[in-house]
Length: 159
Image (cartoon, rainbow, N blue to C red; front, side):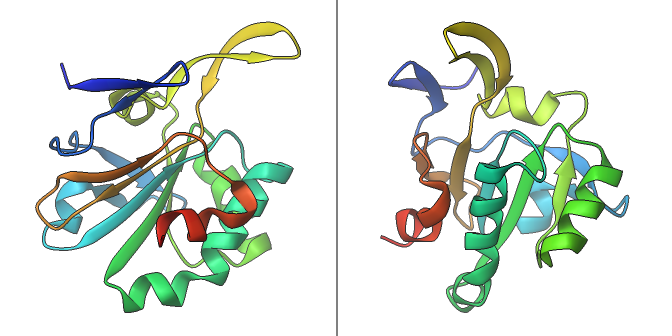
């Protein structure tokens, strides 16, 4: 099991620990794994659902600042439980320049503590916990954001 910390009832992987290995397919069926980013910095962000207001704001903020991330040596990858077809429509509609992994079996979401119980309208449901991890060139988590500001996510990451 991975080391975890609790941030406002949201358990997250701990900064300074090795990022869990992941492998999944993007919107075009291309396989993407943590190994693809060896020697590179990675912003790995988890979001609940394609084309919803908060998720669209977050994706578009990252899109609008994508060149800044590239200039600083970061790759950006989004992950949700939506299908590859849904990701493809979302990516095309908003011209997102980064891959979106379709984690339909929840394996990546669970490995990164981005799946759990959340309260909505007084009801507890299981779902995606909006979470972002920054992973360094050695595969170590160097930042973890559990309270994502969807409209200003880049500012949170490049503080």
